[in-house]
Image 1 (cartoon, rainbow, N blue to C red):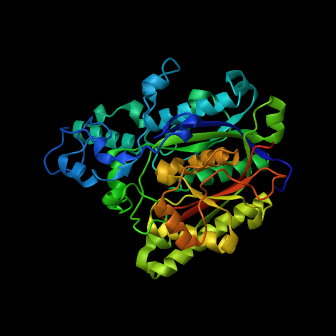
Image 2: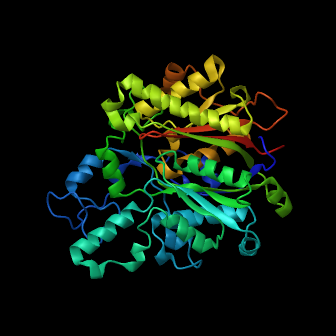
Image 3: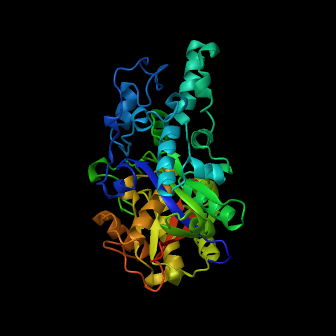
Length: 445
């Protein structure tokens, strides 16, 4: 990496469909049908499409439940009252905030950043999210409309902004450094990592918690369904990246967080060095969102493919690497035909016929939206450290070979150059055109 200030990973935290803690990365895939989440018999009128006042986040009427029942989702088994018992006033937190608070606590613990250390060092937070507290916002509005403004909860109002989880986590953990929220659909947390890397590299911060969060809800599922983004291949199993029969993704909820700090800070504190962020890049092209106004299907895909290439090229340039210096390509592909094809095309153009093996973890983890990129980082650090990757399915393997001319990683990674830590390039292409990439390296031996 160019420049003197190297950026290291010194802590990790995870709440996701597979469980709580980074040990959950070894868990079996936890995707399931959406019908298992819906509460039946809630107080909605016949023919309405909205849950009634006070209904839970999966309370829907029969017609909407039937519409969404077959969709695949990744729901986290997380109980804030249990996980955060005795640590503070849980009533102030909605689900997004509570998952983030717990994931952040794991990362702080692993990095040895206890309360005293956080008083000595200015620790900040940079978070990626797509919709954050959308259920809290909808519930607040429904109550105000149905019961009157005087019955709207002031406690809920504090969580009705896109940066609610970031603010709540900073208050809970006494994080007094920079506080930023990045919203860029499925590229959100990779964009947050790129922003945090730049702030640390340029000396604007010393220690940052960085990651993403997203929660599932009726409002989120219905919105994604109406946009045509959810997988519809009910007979073929859960969504598979690059599959020829791909029709959309399976949204998943959770929070993934890492502690990033300069090498000097990590050494001074005696913190564990778990990996290194080498550089990040972003790109954008709205062609998919614009539809036919941006040209034919091929022209739109090529335009977004070039945006992905700009993101990947920016990450490599800032990392001081060439494409030949990458041992593993970690794709954000999720079963959506257009974005998967654009990312596969970018891989083919960037690496040529002899590119590194690729890994696409959203076949197992689902599309985490705001937290998906941070989940890619946690998966990458595990594989760069010698752990076996999640086993790709046959549909993904055949699809990637057809679209990108490459192969998927099926066993422990073998670096091209054993004299240095193994490297990975993380990439994501979003449905509205947000593209991001981050280059990382494993822990030094």
